[in-house]
Structure formats: structure tokens, C-alpha cells
Image (spheres, rainbow, N blue to C red):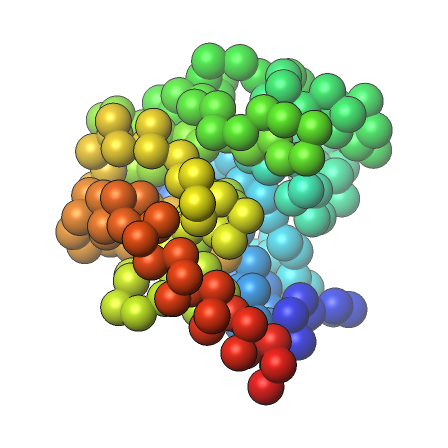
Length: 225
């Protein structure tokens, strides 16, 4: 299977449906399973790190009107600009991502503190020259959205983990997320976690360093096979 799909998606998979939104994977057969989400806000849907597919307008119309597009990771531009222009809405970008704000080919609204029109509060996870990432957390719905630091696909996990830390941060996991108590965790790679989410998060972050040797050995074997 390819690491990332390309060209027009010929198949897509619906994931993570709950009362507060919906998710999808535009290329279900790709190894990294890039996941996108539509969060319900006061005035419509906010598309998070979206990857498009040919029938996306019809799919989203079943769930509401698109009110905006949101980027949570500087590398996750994906189809954000194209979809923002198609639906004539802005792209909401955390103000720490100044390069993205300047260079995105679509109307941009910087955000800080919270995502306007929603319950979601912005939590900065990484802000350095190589990696700028924020998470969203809704206190009422207890929904946590993390684009890259943790994921559910095989590339992120080792052993019996349901949720794994990205290899770039397995030795220094973002333990600030342990302050939160999510009922569900939506990730940028793979289907989300909707049962025992707190336990999965605590296991991933608390044991990330201890399991690092096992993870990196497995990763090396998979790359050589």
C-alpha cells in the first residue's frame, strides 16, 4: 500500500461519527490513513486538516453547511485552501503558524485561545522551527482533536497500544495532554478512539519512553522488510 494516496480518490471511508461531528479517510488503503474531520459549531461545520474526495460536497451537505476550514499542524495544508475557496469560507490558522498564514492561497483568519463559533479551546503542543502543532479540546463534549503527536495507525503504535506517540516525539511525549479528560480522541492519522479514551491517552503518553526501544526496532524492521 502507498504511504500517501494521490490523484482523485476512488474510495473513501467514513469514521468517527458522533453528535458533534463526523470524520473520513479519503484514501483508506494508504499506510498513513490521513484522517479529516468536520466539527459542528454554532454556524455550521469546521473542516479540520481536510483531505478532499470527489463526492465531498454531497457528503458534507448531509451534515450541515461548511462554516470554515481549520489547520492544526503546519504540515497539514492538505486540501485546506482548495476547500476553503470552494465553499467560500476562511481557513482558521493558529497564530503560531506565521508562515502558513502568509503563504496559504485562501482567506485566512488567525486564531488564538479558541476556535470562533465553537466550544473548542486551542492547546499548543509544539512551537519550534521544525514543528508547529496545536490540539483542540471541547470541555462540554470532552472531545480532543490531535493532528500528529498521537495516532492510531500502525506507524504510531507498538505492542498492544491503541494510541501511539509519533516517532518524532516518542522520547519527549506531550504530557500536557494528561491534564485533559477526553471522552473521545480524534487523530490526524487513523480512526479515533471513542471508548476508554482517557486510559488510552494515559497509556500512550506515560509509557511512550519505556516502549521506545521496542517501537524503533519494529520501525526499523518494517522499513527493511
